[in-house]
Length: 180
Image (cartoon, rainbow, N blue to C red; front, side, top):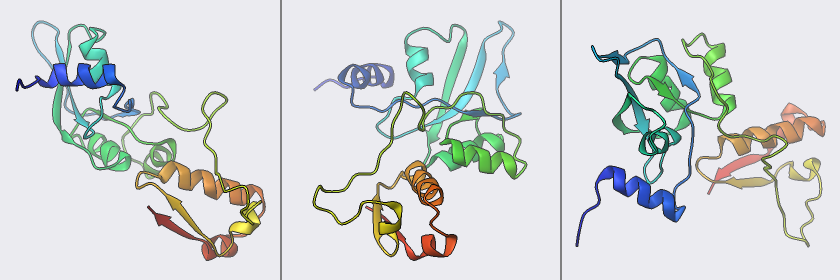
């Protein structure tokens, strides 16, 4: 059995469509390096089983003389941008809410591009069975809501949905979020 190099593995996974693509959203003041030939090296964290847009861009030749240096895998978007803010990496990515919270706390980051969320082209929805008694935000009071373990964006969207339908903070706290 032959072993694929990391670059060929990324290409293979990308071609199969098995990996989700993300884009870094922030940059730290930190540690990219420049050599005498103008080549820059950017340190970053990856995601297990995923090809990042930076890796894809490098493999497709879009980064020209910029070299990526993988320093390990991240466990979450907030952790990824915290690593950038503390200079352990040169860029990172997280959902917009995490970026806003970190920036609001005074972290030395700058948002460059939004890489996921909801807008006119991308939709996140909440679904129930056709025979479910849940029909509105108020029907969620006291109910459990299941989300995947990377559900911070979905949880933020749920909070906005509840606020827009004037479910009070006290009523929202009656709802239990459950990671599934």
